[in-house]
Structure formats: structure tokens, C-alpha cells
Image (cartoon, rainbow, N blue to C red; front, side):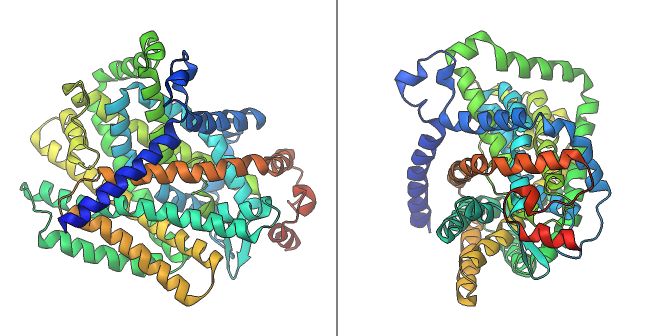
Length: 511
């Protein structure tokens, strides 16, 4: 078994080299990195952050102007005869967005890039809201009807934007499946390891990763995946409609309580974030680049704006107008990063455990207890420490579990886009279970999560490079939709308005 894990780690290390090239190019060349300020910006940063700024300006800060509209859509969401409601789509996309990266990713970004990394997460999220609006609106415009459900997203609008190329739809579907497979191991690892962490908090004793508890958790996880994720998107949303509000409320309230009891540390928190983000020596000395790339990289891992991975739940919604769901998905980025990641940042920075080692080596991405160390540092009293650790561990497990549900269900949708043969879908299902199982076995074997996290980094930037060019190709349709949306003249959105054939919306207009 050890030989197998050593081989996997060796493969992951090679993938990480490629991932770093994608993330760092051309900043990994001395001639470019020596350029003041500009040398801090890699192509990935320019593409992700720059696209968000471009869409924000072109849409006249639509994520701000229609933020309230998105809230109203969620509040007034009604049952859907076809597809799912906007609220259900929001919960499903949140289930995929709000994952372990909201805890481990933020902690890692701060440990490597300092508190200034959190500021750049805020910046990337603000502009990322416009990117999320753009890709979600595109998903709605080009969605298709399949039985009593709507399907759409990256592979669907990619095919339409590339002149109806069936090959493009297949390639993009394969890209999503690869993306999900690269992310499965880390989520399986996190789900089962959180069970062990919960048990340790409750019992007060360390539990061997090869114990019966971990194997039972492994079996329960696989059964849950089979029963829920393979039951169709409506069954998945029944679960996420319950779990997402629970995990979000528990996590937010827990951290808010920690902030309230440490109210005197709040000014220092903002001082640390802004001074570390804008110190002249950081901007001209290279530390700025580290904080920037960590903020954008972990922000992307968390809110997924620009990846196209959240476009499938967006397309599944029975929205009144494509832009309405775009507004809703923009709120998802706000909730994920501006709210939840910021709360995590409060804990990590105000706990000051990250300062105990100047090299930032204290934080191991595979070890949830390292984040709990910051939380318990802020908790007054042993009993409250235990409660905080328990609640955060529960949320961490739910974050990972709901991510898995979303990944697996949409992997199957992409697989059916490639081929409707039952034998092919069965192969994809088995492959998903095998890859998830590998991540769980990594946890049981007591191995480190670092290499699995590297796979996720590579998956994130790979699919973003596929998606963002498509957003520019389809932006003219988004602008037409936005112009019609802002008129509010009561006319339905149709092919005439879109400037291209949109059968779903034509049929909806006739009802």
C-alpha cells in the first residue's frame, strides 16, 4: 500500500509542476518577474482578475446594482414545474462552492501570503461576482430541456458558441469530468477525516486512522453517494436544501460568537490585512506577488467564479429571465468569499497562531487541527473550546460532503452529454467511486492531503483556461440579455431578444 501511495505522490508532484506553470507563467521567468509591480501578475491572475474587472465595467457594476434583486428572487422563489427553483439552484451551487477550501484554503493563503492575501480574496470575489453573473446568464440563455429538467452549463454554451460543434461539447464535458475526478480525492479525504476529528473532540482521545470508525465512515459515505448523487438532480437538491442552510448558519454563528468575545482584536485584524496588502516593500519586493497569487488562487478554489463549474446548477433553475439567475449566482460568490472566507480569515488572523513560525510551516493543508488551533485560541474556557472545535469539525465535514454530491451529480450530466449508453454511465459512476475511495484510503492510511490539494489546484486553473475565453465569445449575448432585463418592459426573453436561437425561452414565452 505504501508503495502505491509513494507512486501516486510522485505523479502528483509532476502534475504540480505543470500546475505551477499554468498559475505562475510568465512570472516564473526572471526577465518578467524583475519588472516592478507588473512582474507580480501572472497570466492566470491577469485573466481571472482582469476578466472580472472587464465584465464589471461593461455591465456597469451589475453585481452591485442588482444585488437586492438577487435577494428578492431567492425570497420569492416558488415551486418549479420544470427544473428546480432559483433557491434550490442557489443552495446546490453553494453546496459546491462552500467547501473545505473555505477553511483550509483561507488558512493556507494567510499562512503563505500573510494577512494581505485575504484582501486580494475580497478583490477577486468582488469582480468575480460579475464573472459569475456572466457565466450563469450564459448558462441560462443556452440551457436545454431534458424531460422535466433543465440541463446546461459550460459544455452546453461552449457547443453553441463554437458554432454548434458536437466535438466542442464532448471535449468540454470531458474537461469537467477530469476536473471533478481531480477534486474527488481531496473531498473524500476531508469528509472521512472530519468524522475522525469529531470523534476525537467528543472522546478527548486520539483515534487511529485505521480504526473501525474510519472504515465505517468510508462505507456510509459510499452508500450515501450511491443513493443520493445517482438519484437525479432533484434528489440531490432535497438534501442540499437542508444541509446548506444548516452548515452555513452553524459556521457563521460559531465564528461570529468568537469575533464578539474578541471584539478588541477587530481593529488589529483590519490593520494587519490592509498594511500587509499595501506595504511598499511588499509591492516592490515580491511579497506582494505571493499575497496576490495566494488570494486569487484560494479565492478561485473557494468561489469558483470563472471556472464554469457552477454553471450547471445555474442552468437547472426555472428562472423568469436569464439575468435573474445571474444575479442569484453573483450572490453565491458574495456569500462564499466576502462572508464565509472572511469569517475564516478573522479566526486565523485574530488567533495569531500563524505568527508562531515565520516560515509559515505550522500550517499543513491536510490537518484540520491547525485551523482549530486558531479557533480555540479565541475561545474563552475549555468547555467552549470543545464546543467550537466540535461545531467547526461538523461544518467542515458537511462542506466536503455537499461538494461531493454536486460534483458527482454533474459529472453524470456531463457523461450523459457524451453518451447516453447505460454501460458508459456505469463506467463513469464506478470511476467516480474508485477515485473518491482513493481519497478516503489516503486518509485511513494516515497519508498527507498535500498532494491531493495540488490536484485540485491544477483542476481549477485548467478548467478556468477553458471557460474564460468562452465568456468573451458569448458576452454579446449576455449584454443583450442584460439590456432587455434592465428595460423591465414586461416582454418575455425570446430568440429575437437573444439574437440567436433559444428554444427553451421561446417555449416558455408561449406558456
